[in-house]
Image (cartoon, rainbow, N blue to C red; front, top):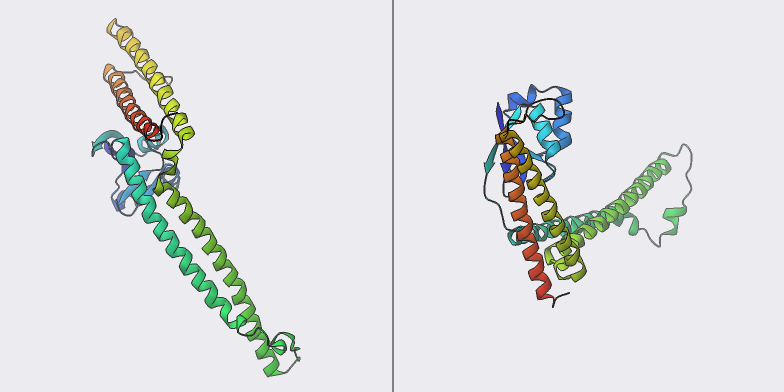
Length: 263
């Protein structure tokens, strides 16, 4: 049995393949892998698209590929640490997008420069094409190339605008403006409280299952496979972890509300 890695810092799961193992996968298996995972160059592994607590599909695909055991790595970050990292990444992302926008604008200007130089030269734009005249046809081809370049220049300017918009979004994330919006904070706090209540109910449900199993009752999944006491205990432990995580997030959001002067 192979192990997948649950990264506690990113709360995503990772699949590590040898090149020969990946090449041995069928086309369908590769398609399944790409539906739930993205290749990470920095990590040199496949990282789940989703993060905790929405890992059920990634784990299902991992199991289909033979990764059935979990290995945990790293340490969980507090919510404030996650926000800080997110802001740092967003700031670096904004800088990249701004550079992309500048580069695209520069390319657009370079592509449109030849035709812009001809502004005011009426003959250049109105000169008729003389059929069979080599010079006239060469001039026509040159003019058409300049028009085509001019159109490509507009495409580069559109790219520049797109990257500028992305940079603005990234800057807003880096600035953390949403954590100064009391209405936003209030909604997220209510979501945390709702999640905590739901997970406490899950724990009570699992406790009931354990009590029944201790009395000799056999529990099975929908497909008929038996459930072990260790599995149920693992589910409970996971719920406790997620409750602790939600409480930490709620405390951070409530501190932000206090900094804003309260609701």
